[in-house]
Length: 87
Image (cartoon, rainbow, N blue to C red; front, side):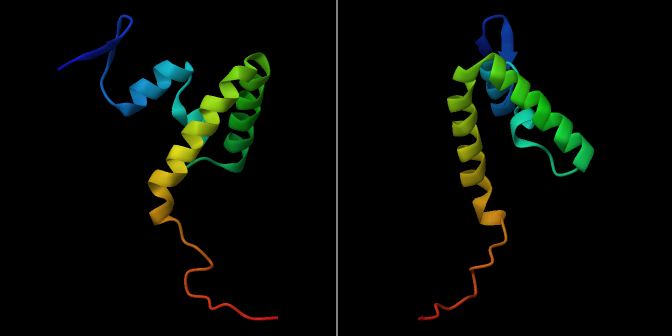
């Protein structure tokens, strides 16, 4: 079954997000391969977009939370092998 939003065919979840936000999800989430300069430029662009459309902040926060939840099992944690220390 094909899905469309307006005249745009949606091929995957990324398409849904891009059409919903009007920007690619990578603008908000970044990518593993980006340099420090690219990250700073991406964050500046995101700041400008949010300044122009403050109502976009809530859906972007939700997207970020979903991404963290989806990939949390892959993140190394410093607490994994620690024991509590009473003070």
